[in-house]
Amino acid sequence: MLATLLERDTGVALPMSRALVERYGGELRFPKRSPCVFANFVSSVDGIVSYDEPGIERAREVSAGHAADRFMLALLRAAADAVIVGAGTLRKEPGVWTAASVAPDLADDFADLRARLHLRPHPTTILVTSSGEADASLPVFRGEAPVVIATTREGARRAGSLPNARAEIVGDSGPLRPRALIDLAVRESAGGRILTEGGPTLFGQFLQDGVIDELFLTIAPRLAGRSRDKRRLALVEGTAFTPSGSPRGKLLSLKLADEYLFARYALRDGGARGEG
Image (tube, rainbow, N blue to C red; front, side, top):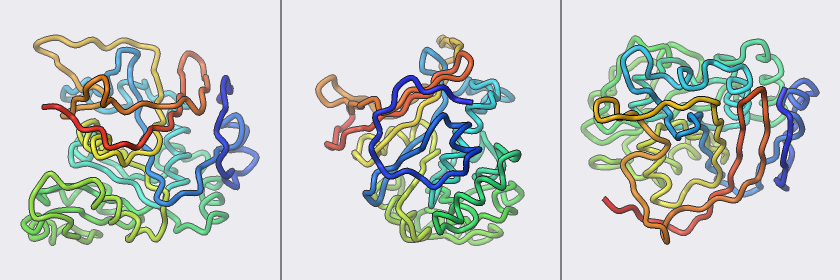
């Protein structure tokens, strides 16, 4: 169960079951605007989101598979119309992007929440890959959630053989623009709550284009470190901001479970642009 330390959110409460409200430590609210784009990450105290080494590159290595972090991820997926996933995340986290896949003990409650919200049984998975290359044997291509490949014209030709998926061209070449990806997610899911689990590089692009409304960040009580030989991935990669152009957040919520902190930030729009 999450203990609430701070709560400032004034959006519309989701129709959660008593079990979900108790587990979350209150109501989860979202703003009325559509689309509403929110990101979810787990990081170490020093900002590392992946050890980025074979065998230990998944987010669960940072979170140590903590139950509250898995619940938070599942709850956000249950609330989402679509989940945007980058090619790097697909390689490191081969799975399905549904609530029940990370918190199966609450599968019925998540299904009930989606039914009350008049959502489809599972959020639409938007896989972002300019090349259109993906391993057809991965679980995402054999699951129940609808899958749309966001890609280029050349990538669409490669992605045509992927099972349980349909390719949509959103650009002539990479990198694919965040606003085009969001428009695709809204159109394909017929809804406006868009969760991005796209990884730190895609997250950086979304920040640069000023399209992220909120960030849910789990801070795990460990320090990962970096070195010349083990660079590792931080929360934002591939984009750098000046002090005056940095996206700034307003702390909406802060929760605690054991030694893990769960922060929620509203991020300002404003089109900050990166350097380098």
